Length: 197
Image (cartoon, rainbow, N blue to C red; front, side, top):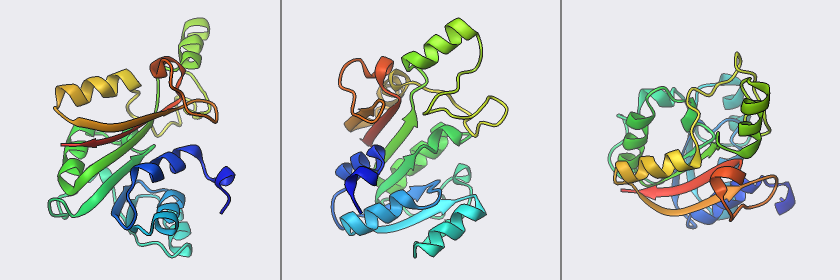
């Protein structure tokens, strides 16, 4: 598969993942990221997804995906049972973020978190000038149909990790089709973090 057809967040997550690692993708959707890691990194992967239509797409790709609600936690998984647990565009949709994230840090050696940055300048401008809930490429849903329950910024996540004594091993920030290096809380649409205890 040509790299220009692979979403940039998937390519960056692939950089975070070591070859032949075990991966648990929480809220894996249609399995594109999981499939990419299995093919590109020879990862041993499993997904959890709540949407049945998305699970059918995963199965069609030959992926091992369980039907489940990631918000219910990972109690059935023993400590350190995966090298990586991934939340790509799914953590902000979980009711009890802190509980689920801490559980993921127990189950995985490392956790990869990717989320839309609610402090992006377009969002700030829409709130300021229109006075309405923003709709952007990284937050494409109207307020009444959004799956997102939490609207966090890159700075919020840095603060969270500091307060919870979670180590940030790597981070990357994505703007419009490219990485952002300067003022990511303002200019990045998506934040990606590799974290561990």
